[in-house]
Length: 130
Image 1 (spheres, helix red, strand yellow):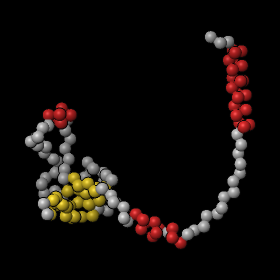
Image 2 (cartoon, rainbow, N blue to C red):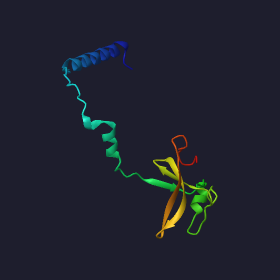
Image 3 (tube, rainbow, N blue to C red):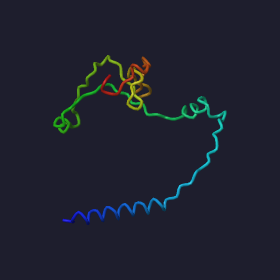
Image 4 (cartoon, helix red, strand yellow):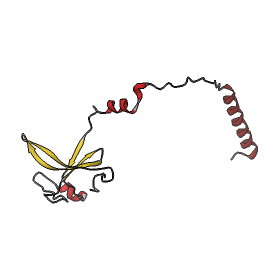
């Protein structure tokens, strides 16, 4: 075990090394130009950039919590009964935020959703809470 004198000497050497590093660090002041407001940077211009972005929409017809043991027993032909009745609307989500409800329909041999209601921010919720 090092004695108290050795520990103090190591601490002093560490402090000296830190002081030497600090003296080698150079800081320079910088003059910044004032930002000039551009007419094309208003809220209208920035929202236009976002209007063409594609976002994934998820449609949920129901949910089911399953114990892992039951999940491992699933096979082709297994049926999971969901939490919603058949007449209940489907929920539409963008980024896990519910924004609308609708009915499942078929259009040209594909599933589709007929929008019933667009939800306001107060009604929007994450999946599993609807």
